[in-house]
Length: 99
Image (cartoon, rainbow, N blue to C red; front, side):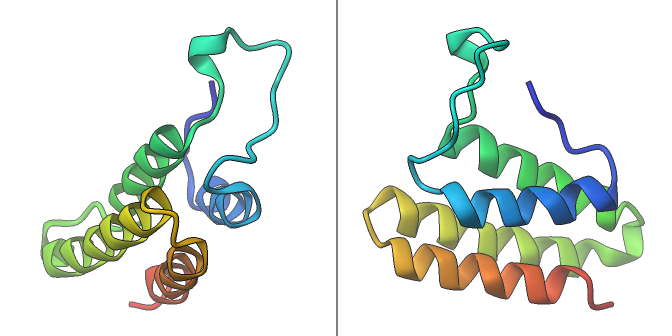
């Protein structure tokens, strides 16, 4: 299963999620069914990426803001609002790499 471990991987994962969310993630034959990418797993990795990008205590407010955007994007996707989910994920992408 894919795990975001660096800023570069986070950048790639954002594009991956934008391309395949909410339910078009490619099936990987080398992964067990329980390890296939899902919307839940994709957003878990995005949330983990926030901590990778801003591990320092001084960025708690920034992390909270970014987690909030991700939560809203996830809920939009989950509720069938694909355009809104993608718009919020684009907003997240624009903000995560700005200090």
